[in-house]
Amino acid sequence: MIAPISGGTVTVQSAKTCVVYDPHSGHIHHVHHAITLRGGREPAQREIEHAALSMARQRAGPETPLAVLHVDHAELVPGTRYEVNIATRALVVASSTDVPPERGLP
Image (tube, rainbow, N blue to C red):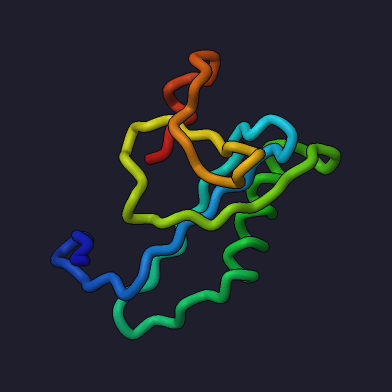
């Protein structure tokens, strides 16, 4: 994968994504992307989870129950709203229409 940057392009070594969601409803509070450029150090799964949870806690508050699900970055469709199927712990296209469009994945 090649990513454009100001003044040129760089090679992406890896792109990892996890979602932080409410384990009771499946509502996604935060989508976290960890992009590693060629030659960079890839963060461990725990590091990605820690960063994602930290950001989600700032928005959701300390008492909100949260869970993390790692997903395949390549399978995400920009502009699509997702939720987590809590029975299968799988990312699915959101079935409800009460989530504002700006909450979709970038």
